[in-house]
Image 1 (cartoon, helix red, strand yellow):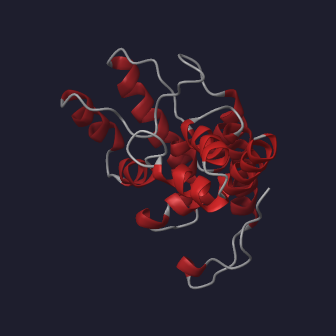
Image 2 (tube, helix red, strand yellow):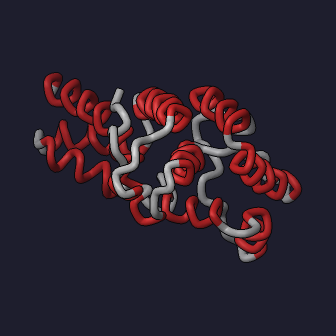
Length: 192
């Protein structure tokens, strides 16, 4: 598991508070578990390890999957930072779009069990974020979409708690997944 930096450069090197450290640890553990279940970035690492046998290409392949559908962190941050995330979700849906940070191909119609502890911690310690997440969920359900937050939502929530700029938020996803991607590369490469 990757530890939170002792000083956060985007906050003028302010040290993280204990509650922020605890959320970081929970998100890091959930990311590690999630990375080992065959999502697109992990599959890309495995494929590149077998095809090219080059670690940097495998990690670049994983990074190339991030964005619109897989880990849309910048878009999820914008949604959660909006004055009215529920209204933003309504607009996206009315225009035929999807809501970034919601939906999961591994657990359809139920909350992702890998992220349950993170969701509970956010609900208990960061009610302002929990309310925003719940408001978006309510809009989705009212529109017949029984989908729940995915790792992008919870990673964006951590970024918000840490005061991280939107454009920097994807670095959290990469930081949290890099050890698992490295392990996946090594297992695939050494088998190949």
